[in-house]
Length: 193
Image 1 (cartoon, helix red, strand yellow):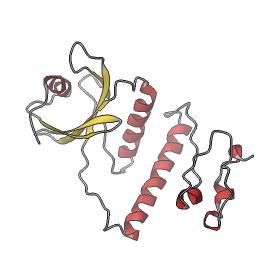
Image 2 (cartoon, rainbow, N blue to C red; image 1 turned 45 degrees about the vertical axis):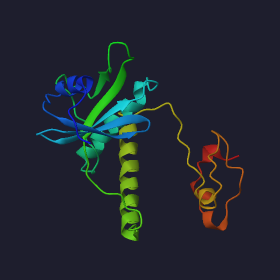
Image 3 (cartoon, one colour; image 1 turned 90 degrees about the horizontal axis):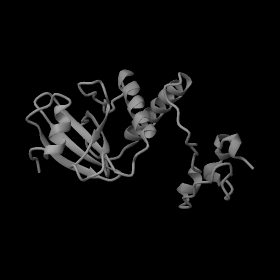
Image 4 (cartoon, one colour; image 1 turned 120 degrees about the horizontal axis):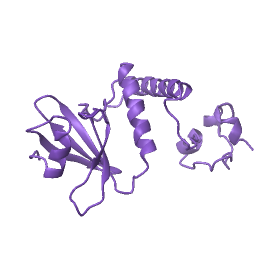
C-alpha cells in the first residue's frame, strides 16, 4: 500500500531534493527495500540491516552498478545526494543505531516462472557474461577490490541435488559426474588438491 514516507525516510529523500513522495516497502531480506514514487522518477531505497556495518561491500556494489549502467546494462543506477554521496547514513529515530542506505533507480519488470523459455535463459547468460566482463575490467583498473575470496560451486553436484560449496583451498569431495565433465577444466587450479 502506498503512503507518505515516515519522517526518517522523508529526511533522507530530502537530501536528494525529493519532496511529496509516496513509498511502499517491497522487501525485507538482507536489507529493507522501499519503492519510492516521486514526480521526477520511480526509485528504490535500500536500508541495510544494522549489522551490515562494513561499507566495502556496499561501496563495491555501488561502483559496479554505476559502471554497468554507464556501459548500457539495464541495472538500477545509484543516485547521489546533493553532496555527491551515494551511501547515506539513515537513522529511524534518535534512540536507534545508524544504518547505511542507498537510493537507486527502480527497474520495472515481471517475474518469469512458468513462462520461462530458452530465450530468457539466453538473456540471463548474456547478462552474466556482461557482469563478469565488467567486474574483470573494474578489478584490473583497481576500481573494485574485495578481500573476500570467490569460489565457484560444482554445478554438476548442484544439478544432482548435492549442493555443496567447497571450503577455500579445497576441491569438492565428490568426483565430477558425466553431466559435469567440464568440471576439471573449470575448477580453479588454486582449489585443486
